Image (cartoon, rainbow, N blue to C red; front, top):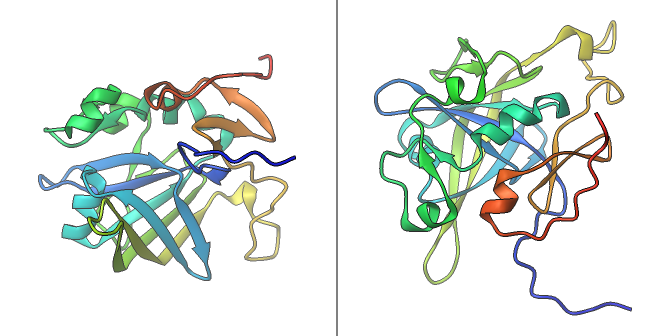
Length: 212
């Protein structure tokens, strides 16, 4: 029997992406997000309008999409509830967000120069996509609160171990993306790490973490 619910979030299960974008001072900002979907050589990114990443995308028109394996869940969780904005919105402050200028250091990740765009790639991510923003579409009526950005992939970098030998295809068995389901982290079908974001959203927890 179905039950009618007023769901707080609609995160049924999407891959986690770390977006690299260029700050006004030329440094690279990192932002984990899970509101992304793919079509052909394009990706649509859903971002709240108050985010530093959103401001960077509007100003610079480019980014890197660093696809995260489940093994990097701890680094992603360290980025949760952080913002590159020196003045976080009241809503983010209420959730526990704090300003962090050096996201690489905060997450324990390393920058890697890009080839076609200004923001650095995340060296530890085995799939990195350099992108240009080709469109932006407001979400919300009558007052927009978020924007859907269309990112066109201009160059893809893939770790050799993930490529099927002799082809230009990623091995779907070898590639184990980090998945976020209702603010909780999953990899290989298992709940792999506690989530600070879930705590910030005050989501109920029934963790069944796989023993280490």
